[in-house]
Amino acid sequence: MAIPVRFDDAMDFQPNGLAVVSERGKYGLIDSTAQYVVKPTYDSIGPFSERRATVIDGEGFKLIDEEGKVVTKRAYPFIAAMQEGRALFYVTGDGSGGAGGESKYGYLDAAGNAIIPAQFAEANDFHDGKAVVKVKDREYALIGKDGRTIETFAHAYVGPLGDGMLAFQDDPAGKYGYINERGDIVLQPAYTSAFPFRNGRAIVNTAEDYQSRYGVIDKRGKAIVQPDYNDIRDLGEDRLALGRAVNPEQPYIGSRYAIADWNGKRLTDFVYHDLSDFKNGLASVTDATQTYFIDRSGKPAEGFPRVDGSGTLSVEEGGLIKAFIDQRLSYLARDGRIVWKQNTVIPLQPPYAVKELKFKPNHDYLVYYPQIDGMTDEAAQRKVNEELKTMSQVKPIPGNEQLEYTYSGDFDVSFYKQQLLQLELTGYNFPFGAAHGMPTKTYAIIHLTDGRLFELKDLFKPGSDYVKVLSDIIAKQIKEDPQYDYVFPGAYKGIQPDQPFFVTDNALHVYFQPYDIGPYAAGFPTFTIPFTQVGSILDTEGEFWQSFHK
Image 1: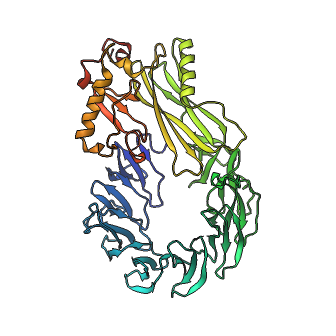
Image 2 (image 1 turned 45 degrees about the horizontal axis):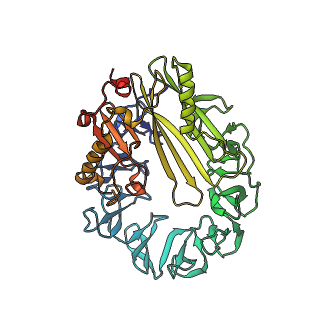
Image 3 (image 1 turned 60 degrees about the vertical axis):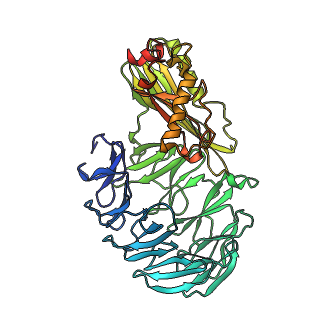
């Protein structure tokens, strides 16, 4: 280990020799000797771009240099990465950054000055010294890095610059065409979506009614790739990924990809479930069973390993191959030898441990589930481990059929003390075509002596009206604590006898599923109740309490 394990989170080292790390919930920057260049005081730190990085703290967004000095004169509601010496930012309302009012966009220079004041309704990054901004409805402009207007465009929409061309719309609900930098129409509106040109090519969609018929055109509008595909991706290095729908009747399920050259010639069959952009002549691809590198010819790259599972590979400095496969990280040598991988055993106090097992019966179904080891009562251990598999959604799933959803499940040891082990089991079900998936969370709270799974009622004295006591406490928190303003009016009716919950050393935590009492964005509304607040009804002689207070 070059730097011993000590951080809660750690990102890759950047070309400037710095890495973003986290301790105690805050982020900072270290050098290669693990010395802090920027102490962990920020809520987040973005990657460096042109020797500047965006940081966020309680005041908002700021820019720092590579020594950690804040170069901006104030905080902003948003700052983008530095691009060609300019960083896009916006202010809201009266410019103070407070809530309410319309956003106005401008640009900062590397010294943190608002070199172009916030005045635009919309704005894009600079490209070749120019940027497209929206001045007002039906008025867009092309500006230089000094903010002066080069050209104006009277259209309902004008997109970002690419190869001297800009996509445009005359009707917000109409089709897209392309204009040049002078505003002359080069290609009449004929596309339902149109992406920026790059190296003489642009990806367009010709389908109606939100369908997908993607193709590739040149600057004259000639079809380089006929618009017959469910998806097309520009992979860089003059290579395209052509996506054919897995099920033409349900195109939203996704695509299988083939590789094509810049002139539209197909180099492979439609065999890839996913693939990354090309970098230094290599792209990471995943087929039905393995992940590996291909070269620009579309063939498997020689001298690199194949890894079972789905994910991505990348070649790191020094030649190590970083593999993020089936949501787990490892590092490989060129011959495929594993140099390092994440642990699959969580050691507890001997003889106890929690083992991680993997269940992947289908390309779209992946679960990591816990199994307890070290219990004296082997029958009890077998029983609780079977229950953990069921709770983790390990169940019969067809292997070779295309599912109509993806599912991923994982777990963590959220609390462990004496004979009490608490496992957090999480899942995410995403139906293809849905706006978002549905997360799930449940807790297995286990007595390691006999394998008993505790319920909420086990924490309280028999006959006590714990449901009413807890319901009243939560009702008061909703009424008095501003953090619960998101709760739907009238939605909270109290808790159920088997309400989901978990414990920590000094408190009970009761939670609700998404949409139960609040919006999806609220996640799992959680209410903390210190044990001292319900001490009169706690069963302090009961097995649950004694398991971690003996």
